[in-house]
Image (cartoon, rainbow, N blue to C red; front, side):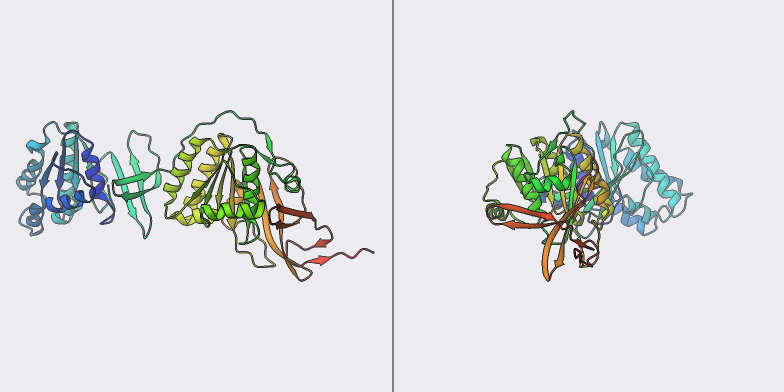
Amino acid sequence: MKSEPGTGKTIFGLQFLLEGDKSVYISFDEVYGEVILQAEKFGWDLSKIHFIDKVKEMDILAGGTIFYDYDAVADITEFIESITKLEELEDVERVFIDGMGVLRDATKNESIYRRITSSIVNFLNSIGATTIISAEMTDEIGKDIISYRDGKVLRTVEVLKYRGGDAHLGEHYFSITPKGIVVYPVIPVYRPRNFERALLSTGSDELDRLLGGGIYKGSKVYIAGKTGVGKTSLCFQILKENDEKGRLGILYAFDESEDIVLRKYAEIFGYRPKKLIIRRVRNMSLGEFYRMVVEDIELKPEIVVIDPLNAVDEMAISTDEFLSMLSLLTEQLEMLGITFIGTQKIAQPLGEFHFTGVGISRFADYLILGRHMEIGGELLKTIAVVKNRFSNHERTIRILDMEDGKGLKIGEPLKEYSGLMSGVVQKHISP
């Protein structure tokens, strides 16, 4: 297990040892008192863990008094046996060797270091002990290698190698909680189940017409546009119809609290949702968010909404990681027959046109674009459906408006205008 200092190697090792009936902690780096202080922060009792302090020997090695060259066979053998002949290792189940990189630095000889490490690991394997070795440099010795990386905000763990096993490679997120390290793997959880891909109404005849009849159950809907074009209101409309049918919906809201969401429902629709679960998402990693959604799927919602996806992207160590998680999540929702809706804020100056900006449009079964347009000196909200993977859809642009207490109002197609997508609007004059 390799990482930079302070990323949680010792904490991870202690958690590992506490799960065993007989465990041994061999330290080349931290004295017993320092380890005890770390354990006390989590309320852990280390009385059943045997602690072997090799820190002082590392100080002697650093002075160059032994292991000066590869031919110092007696010294090397003596050091190896100082570990392999420990009484504490009899019938041991788990061993954590902390700070093996210190031994590398002290020997100043890669061949000697590898000789010592190989001998110790081979011995521990021979007695059936499960061993974790921590270091601040890459080690190729050992069957399983775990790599930690601690960024400015996010912590990730990556399994680089698992000989003879089926590991989920790639980076996964973890956090250090008051109870210790918790890992949030972004991995498949659910298997497909049979469902009828029925056509669901949005509750708005005009929106259904734009979409080509409605939204198919289990599909992926993306609503993209600049701030203020009505993306969230469109989500509310679809969730309201779902709620009125007595079906469960879940809204993951990043920008608005539950109180604000309910107030907007009252203002726009004169309606209070009965079965809608509103999750306010704050201060999470991508892995934590993924696990929350996966656990909520157990509630069997009909619709899941994430508003906006930009905030999920900011949770990730990279946009590629975000897209990978989004692809995995939506695939699982689809196989369970759960409809997914995600909004995406895009930077869109008037006169320019983009779909989403980060490449999520390729995942979409439906793509709805909202944008501001200036027509006749008035700034209007408009929407258009630019993608329907299942069937034909209306290829027009309509004005989107809201009337307090009555919900969304979608106007007639703007057929008398051209250049709406480019921002260079012209009105056709009838001859």
